Length: 287
Image (cartoon, rainbow, N blue to C red; front, top):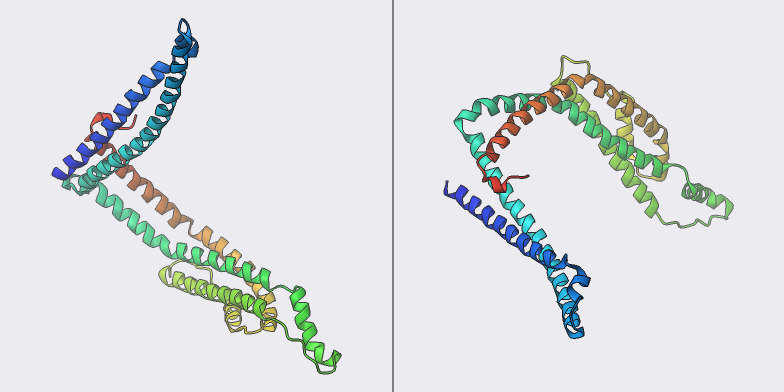
């Protein structure tokens, strides 16, 4: 209880600071509303010059106070949020509220556990698609491939002299192909886990060609090896897309259960938050 009182006292002090700044800002704006004409009429030149300097100083003071107010409002919000969170935690832990929150938490947890294998396969499938598209785009035939092919024929065309070429581009492409092969291998494993966790549901399986594509990409060591898996990579992209589309359809029921359970849990949680607001002083509540 003492901790709650300390949080509330700090929030009230910060609210007092905001109120004080509001009063000071209103006072300066009230003095400014008269306008330069009403201030200068009937005054001497010296009095007018003095008034102009005072207006400049009041404008600078107003800008400073507004900056301080923005900071004070942010500090007040932090204090109120901490106070609200503390009240919410106390209400959630109260025995009279467990009969509301515990069942909603259990339903949400069960729904998430049922949907997790589907969600895992979708996540790893998306990662595999992105990695394959990167590797396939970088591994396509380009000007560098032409130079490689020419270097293979160079001994015949140049009397035995071989051109030395940088392999940095090949190494980068190999890294991308290996990353795609690894992502594809993980996706295939996620499909097997999905079939194990949902034996009662017809789960899309990875073809033997998809598994072989992953092995071939991981085994690639040269640019020629990259070129050999180009066709398999293209087919794998299409197959993964079809599998993910099928998973989306077959997991619609579990996905709907998660959404319904989340809605029920949020409803209970929102009622507890509303109850927590009633325990906070009215001047600290949002307008």
